[in-house]
Length: 580
Image 1 (tube, rainbow, N blue to C red):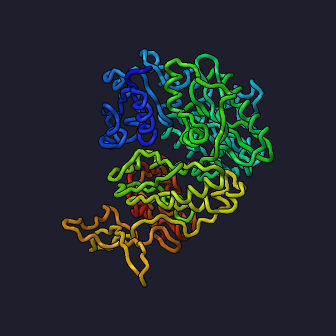
Image 2 (image 1 turned 30 degrees about the vertical axis):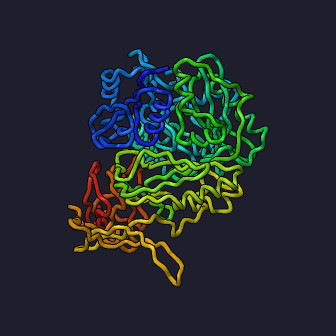
Image 3 (image 1 turned 30 degrees about the horizontal axis):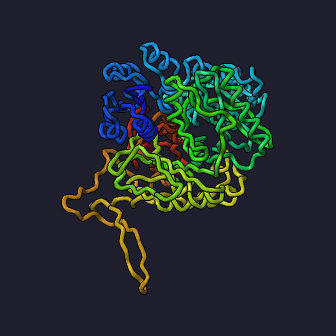
């Protein structure tokens, strides 16, 4: 077994790997950006090394800086977590060339499966077929238009070297192709360091079902059941569960065997996930993720197998300690992603900021994996996942009830979270009846009035508002209430106004001021002074927490002024344009 493992990641997954290593008696090394100097993964690791920089490109995606940390720390293995370098064959090769073990698949497997186009070909060679898609990289929007005209609309543009919904754009008609391709390339480059894209037919009402596999260096490969990840927004998962419900047992077995065939076909080693789209009783190969998945805990809960421990043991050359016949699934597990986003009636607006307090749920069958504690900051430069609430129940209904109970116990103050949207999904009869699909949250789920519990806007001259919990009695019955009140504590700072003028109404209907609802970076200005726009037209594109958000006109009219340029940083409420 290894003596010292460096975790080339941050946040929740870095914490998860650190804990697994320490349980095995392995010393851990954290790396951190300037913004993460006091982060939880840094505090928990046995030692930590600075990478410098703030953005992911300046720190966690800086190969030279990470290699320097490996050399200086004397680590004999590197765990990449997920995201960043986890599916980067060049990085895996560089680590291996140093004589350091890469805790993941061999670079050759990453190369085949990391390129989603060659991955389709590899799956087809072992008889596992996907939805109709391109076999070459997209270089021009005309290719998207031609594909859509031949195979039908909508078309999904996807990052060739990514996953998790990042860099994916759905094109409903030919007129949208050019903007969608540009946006997909920008997101892919920001998150994965590469901007190549491919495309495939976008199914109308599929479920997203994936199969967890484990493969060792001795030729053993098993699948550990399925997961359903269909509750999504912006093609990114909100809720995952294991096993995937409502699918005939024979289909589950066929999926499992197909996943193993795909893994063996590329000589895969380590933990990996083969993803499928399931619709009308049939499944289609989607892609293989050559890494640990965010949703891996639900598989752990129903199998009793620690997937990170297995990754470490496999990388150390140990054979699997079980066979396919030994894999049994017990009960049902649900994972709820708690992201720093305001559901905002379905808009899901990123919400960076400082967590002022955080109370996490407990109880039987309840687990909370997080990379943050009270006092930590959620930065606009990184993924907005605060933590994952995972529950187990004897049945799916039991797991849903336990998840609702646990969510009601969760209390995070300082940033908005997706918890209210998670509750809306869990309480909906269509989710309970397994009638949802990957488009259900955005197209069918009514999130009107579903917003985060955030403080009201400050009023000029008032002290900042703080949340106070009070216990009151009414006719002898005790009630707990929350109130946002002015902070009268000694030294409380007065609210600051941005250097840019702020809008009281944002870009609301009828307002000529176009304001951004969150902190972020302007990646595109879609209009020019003098242009005529209609209500709902995109004025600028704002990137926050690796997601692009279209900031729209609140009224029809003429662009009177533009206050930002591409690359500018903006704060919540900043006015970026004025419509007259």
